[in-house]
Image (tube, rainbow, N blue to C red; front, top):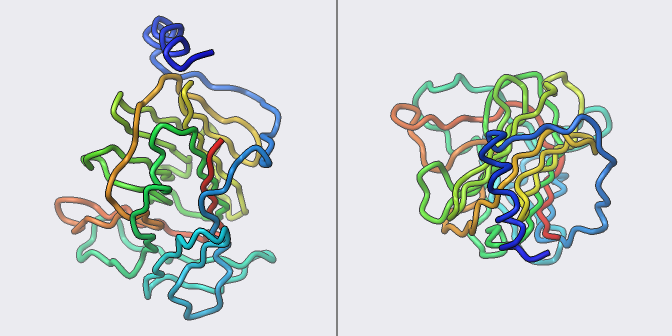
Length: 240
């Protein structure tokens, strides 16, 4: 089926059902169908300041000085992001990890998959994003308001956001997968489909770095930094 045909068939359905459909149960996705773009295992030792991309593509990141590397919980080693009071100045750029802009990190027109393994007991913050709400070229992000993951993609044809039905701020490790494709956006948690939003958002291609744990451009006064609190064990980005 061509992309244009798929869009046309969905138009009436999208209008009538307010763009969102939730799936109760789905079979786990075959991870082997994903072509790696970047993979950060986040298992560097304490004090490390470089997040290494394990794909060999060289998409390494810069680890802020407030990020706790070498943190082991329940047998998994990752980064710890301590809780910061929401919207309390000043901004704390050392709380985040950044990866320089690269065209491979932009979804473009591709089916794009972002997978994060995390644990938290909190209910606020941006987990991973590239671009912000008003960025030219669009943006995408995963965040966790009220302990429920939200996945958003904004492109040249509009935006779609999906919210998890299940809260995961229970202190356990969870794997969250957010996929943007020609049919829309799908959110999976621990291999099960949580929610879908139908509709093509168009091209996403911005000049921003990828940020983990909060926003790059913020001041905690006019623009909140939305700092994440909790642990992140790994992040994978790929295409189908």
